[in-house]
Length: 573
Image (tube, rainbow, N blue to C red; front, top):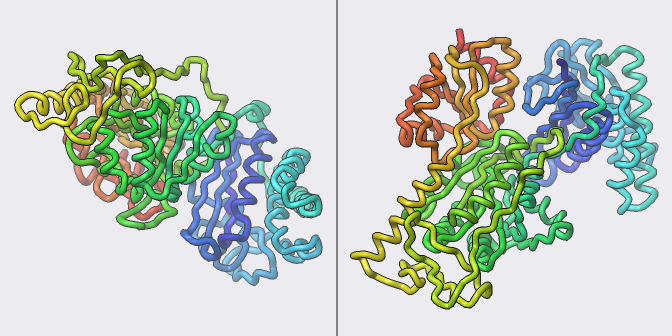
């Protein structure tokens, strides 16, 4: 199993993302497995952005530090990425950029006069399409598919722009074939014909597809990186799936509208990031006392405050777990793969509807922006489960029941009046200050009885690997792919992975589950400064992980496969 790591780097506005869009589509159609990750600064122009595209003969879903082929658009882009180069790396560079490459061997350097060729075609911006052509030529990928993609991408700009981009691509393709033919760049990857039928999807799209499969017909959000991609995806597909798109005036309004939409009978989603969710907490408490369903997608980024708005982190577990004044229940999911993002988001809508609680889907920048190809999703067992009732004249929205679930009615569906209130209320929904009976009973149904219900459906973490391992790696969310690849690369049969895709509530038998599998040693790998999952396991399950066994990253960079390999070598001696 082999792969090649290609990094294209440049300023914001130079077309790095355009190159990525062309490459991932054409290479996938050509039968190559793809994993694309990106880094970008919080600016519209300038800075140093890059995208890494891993091309492989097997499925890959993780970021690596290694660069096999670097294509920098300017000096700063080269300087930003050169520390990831090795003696086996190749560099495609334009002499006009005057990059100091004296530290590289001559055999590592491939010079291409990109700007000169682009100007001859008509505009320096065509350099990025030339680069896309070069890379696709290196892999002898589907030239016809590239032409169709370019036509689709640029046809709104007119025929001349389409033709110029196709000319630029063809020029690059010929250069790529020449480079391969000369032996300056070699690979032995064999396309897999089955990949053509795969889905190429990123984390944001997987969440969006899961929401559609869950019956989402309303989303309210205020744009906030890196969560905005979910709003954009649903907006793009809103006509096909009859989804109302509301770009709210702020995050406070966004969740209030989401709660209101559920009250009216919609299946609604709010999507934001940590700073935006901080503004939503009062509306979250409103959902709690109204016993309203709500589905919230939180794409994490480093804080506090604005922090690093375009980087990645796992810092908001505590925020989501404890947000909102008063006490009410919630469920928290954290997908580790794009497939999990689809299935868990779909499930979130059914659970929110059934148990009348907020359900969270926690992702992060690394996850939502990462592309990879996956087999077709299995939707044969997926159902949209609706749990509201037709009301009668004596309907009680907050009726006290044995299991703590009141029948949820929708205004206009039946003859009953559906009263809700942000104040404490009786069974009919009237405001009350009865502290002797009504208040304790309402707290009990919202908190204690609801917890008993949702704990029963809590899912155990996924155990990958052998029983009685020498080392068990605890992780959650987006760190899973890098950990899996590092463990696979280690060729060791005494390492297991415990991946938590549900963070709250934990199953009642979680401690028994881990002890039964009998790990000799456990460590936790998290992208935060305090070990938030490790702390949660201690508080809610009496599972202790020593501080020296916490491997925490809070720089804003994702864990790479090499990072995890180093941790494994350190911990599994």
